[in-house]
Length: 136
Image (cartoon, rainbow, N blue to C red):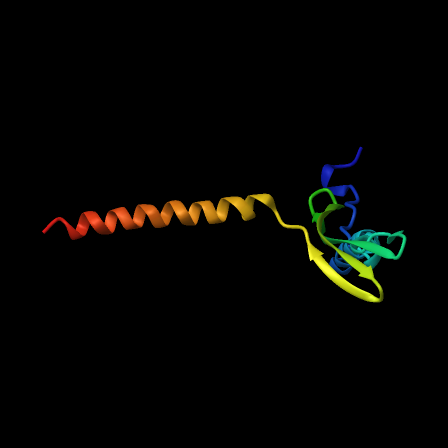
């Protein structure tokens, strides 16, 4: 029977191995997500009807992260990562008779709510100014 101190302890992986594993993980995530965020994803397939062509335009955003860590007590490495992507329609390009024009898709909230809020704030400020002027 051997004493507990006589057991062979596994050596933890070198720091460079952990760093390389982390870099490989991030590179893999970037390759996977970057391949999806291409010009084809931003500009959809053109639709042609007669002499008019419409090309949809979107905004694509993506992000990713990952990491690898070293557990020196168990001599193991572990890691993980993830990412995500989002796409929002922004407008469309209309091509007619060789002329291309971009037409943005406007958010109805900003088209209605912002002017309405400005009107309400302006009316309230006007009333406050009159009240302060008549306080004398």
